[in-house]
Length: 281
Image (cartoon, rainbow, N blue to C red; front, side, top):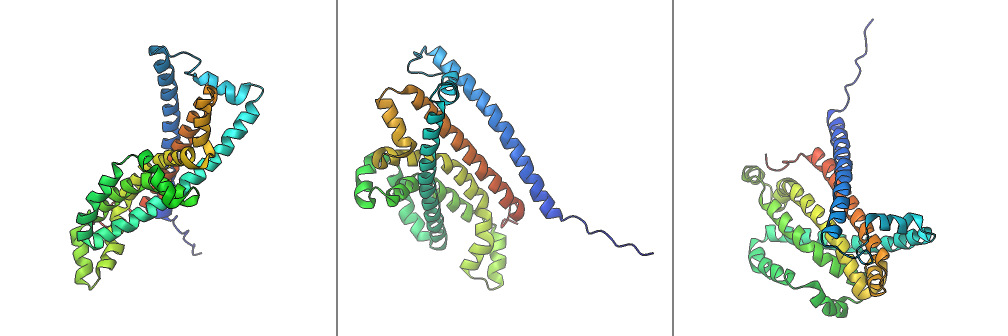
């Protein structure tokens, strides 16, 4: 009696799933180790420099503020509410800066003289402190979504622009020649060869930019919106509420690490599907 062969599992799908699970496991282990090291360094720093406990709160003080004191539930609710606003502002800046940087990097690749003309100017603007540009940003973009996009976008724009530009230029010349020999345009070569080659650089820039976007959002909130954790930490410091200050620092740090990890997992999925050296073969 003939037997029906069982289809073999999809190799690439299993490979992607295995890569993602491995990345998640490594990320969780890294997070735990990093948390332990940070707590130890936190205690060591306060002890070595003999910082008064009224100003320099210990991890146990933050724990009590969030979970033990009678107002702990209220404290957590206020922090989570502020965190939601800050992450929303950070997302606006992150997306705006990333999209603009990728478009400019593509334009630089297609029209190389533009890169030589404008990239040094962009780097010069990057050297100007954001706080110094804040009044101008407020006048031009206002205090709403456009202002958040401007401040957060500036923080994200430059690392993404530089890394993606380098990635687009790293495409294999042999692969580009193959596209041209077969009648492909510069746009075809960009889409089929240069963009896949730039993916590792893009994700490296995104990992760097995620914490920067959060800091940019907090700066925007401090300067313009009076909402979110950026405004809260400024008020708490002015009102000598150091338990709240340190709790905000812990929450922002944890959120930044979590977002960094999420970008790393997305990177694993994308590069597993495309191949880490896509476009360079």
